[in-house]
Image (cartoon, rainbow, N blue to C red; front, top):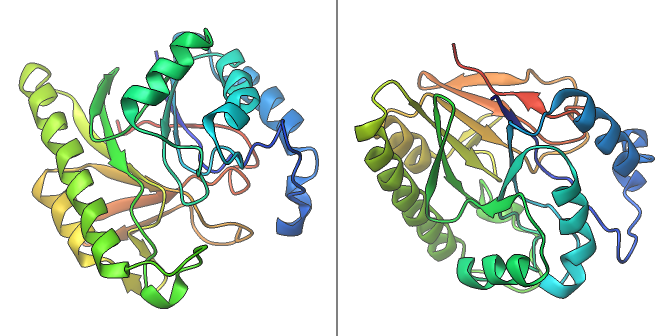
Length: 241
C-alpha cells in the first residue's frame, strides 16, 4: 500500500468550466488525469487531494465529480480548497456519500488518518498575504487565518493520538494554500508544524508555474507543491524514506 498526493483537480463534469485559461496543460485534463491515475494507483493505495476538487456550488451539483473520483482506484482523502463551495459539515458529507452509494472517499477535516507508515493530517490554510485574497465577498483575513491554524492544531492533536500506537509512523501535513512561497513565510503555520514534529508539508493552489522546484525547505521543514497541473495530472508517490 502506498500514499499518493495530488491537489486542485478542478473537476466540472456536471457544469463544464473551461480550464485552458490556466494554460495548455489543462486541455483534456479530466481524461489525462484518469489515464495517469490508473497507471500508478492501485486499489490498495491512498490518494490525498487537498482542495479545489470541484467547481460545484452544492453537494448535489458535486455528485458527478465525486462519482468520478470514487470510480478511480484507491481510497481518497479530500481536503477543502478556496473554490470548494460545495463543502459541508463532515457529518453531512459522509451521509450524502452513503445515501448516494458513493464509496472510497473520506474527508480530511479536523482529523487524521494512518496510511502505511504515514499519519496524514491537514486543513485548508488561507491566503499567504491579505492583499492576495480573491474572495466573493470581503473576508476577515486575520480571523480566517487564525481559525485555519486552530483546525490544523486539531488535526495534529489527532495525529499525536495515532502516533502513540504507531511509534514508527511519521506525521505529514496537507494544506491547500502554501505555508511558504517565494519570499513569504507564514511563521505561525511553520512553527506549529515543527512543534508537532511534522516531517513534510504538501500544498496546492498555485497554477501555471512549472519552473519552480517541487520541494523547498523553510526552517528545516520540506514543503512540496502538488497542484495537478504542476504534476501534469499524475498523482505523486508520497514517500519519506
